[in-house]
Image 1 (cartoon, rainbow, N blue to C red):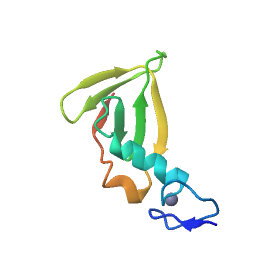
Image 2 (image 1 turned 180 degrees about the horizontal axis):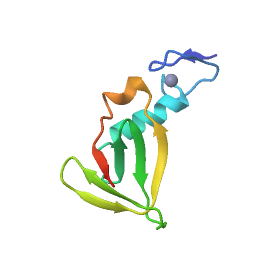
Image 3 (image 1 turned 90 degrees about the vertical axis):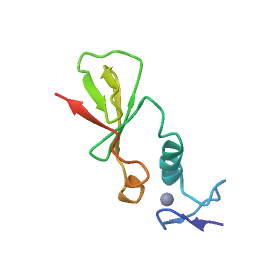
Image 4 (image 1 turned 60 degrees about the horizontal axis):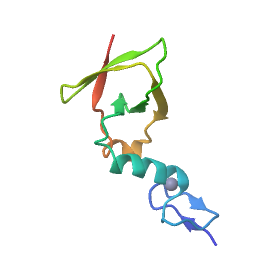
Length: 95
Ligand SMILES: [Zn+2]
């Protein structure tokens, strides 16, 4: 027995704990925790600042005034359009 995802409306062929698919559930979890200080959204792209240092870091300037030197930025890709209003940009990169 499957179901139709409440978010993306795609039919799913498994039964999950929520009426949403795995992909949408992942975005919803991020939206729920969007105040997390390590979450970065720039130009509809979602990043998480990690703790392991790399050479090619970026300086993140959050809209709330915080500045983070992100030496380990994980790129989780572009936020699907249906979630952008719930996960708006919260920073810019200082170049
Ligand atoms: Zn979905």
